[in-house]
Image (cartoon, rainbow, N blue to C red; front, side):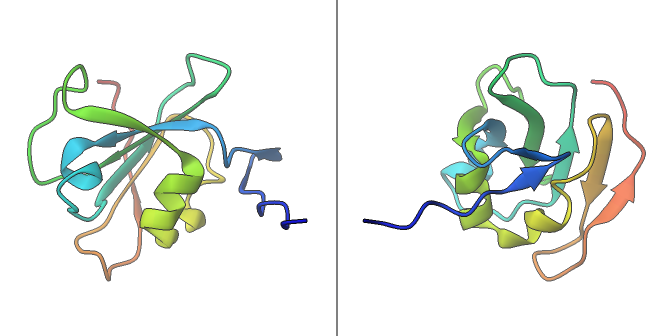
Length: 108
């Protein structure tokens, strides 16, 4: 019997299978995640998290894909350090090797 997947907790809830938006430059071109923001979730399975490359402009109508949080963590485990933050927060880093730093949250 395979082991149960390890939960990924945020605000006391397992969000591993829940949804996040990921820019196509990260998802399909392999650019690193350099900007993470958490909006208010709009659906039950939505975490509110968005992960961007912060290199190119984005139109989330056409430039995003939906990944589970487990997929985001598999792509970049460093996001585990910020996932427990509440909605209306944002984080940035200058490079893949840099630490995440909080930044002012701006409504888009």
